Image (cartoon, rainbow over all chains, first blue to last red; front, side, top):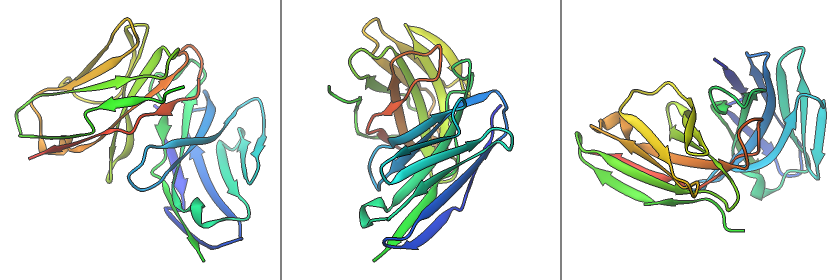
Length: 114
Length: 114
């Protein structure tokens, strides 16, 4: 089955700086890569996703890049704000709808320092 | 549109008992997936239902089961509860299941086994 590795586990950045979270996956059949943000005590919230037919997708301050050859994808947050503090999860799923559902990374705790 | 709802939100059970959790997907969504979230293992896929049929199943023992009704609502059942079953159980709904669709999570049911 799919295996997703996520780094770093904790990331502390100054407010206004950029943050980058990286994930690698093992199954070359995976072609859907969502990112979720989970604030303390709340549900995971889908913030952006990318499919393997594109290399980059951007939504305001958030962007995701995908390198299918290297099997890694990254989340980029620019001009970080205090409300960006949360745990971020990457995930992967294969083209057939995913025999294993979404496979998640272990999460990155992003801390925005004022 | 109303989001994904789950009931109950909190549950305390004793070892050996069984429990049933309920999930109502977003209106129009026909696929429901279930995940277990724990601090140690992160988010792990349990199973996925589409049109009342289980499409996929994760690597969990047979004590974990589920079903989906004709109105797309889903239930999951855990029999013979163990202490290790204490977790946040999240369901996620998506429009379809034959290709990777965006999944939206419910607030979860926090299960504590004593």
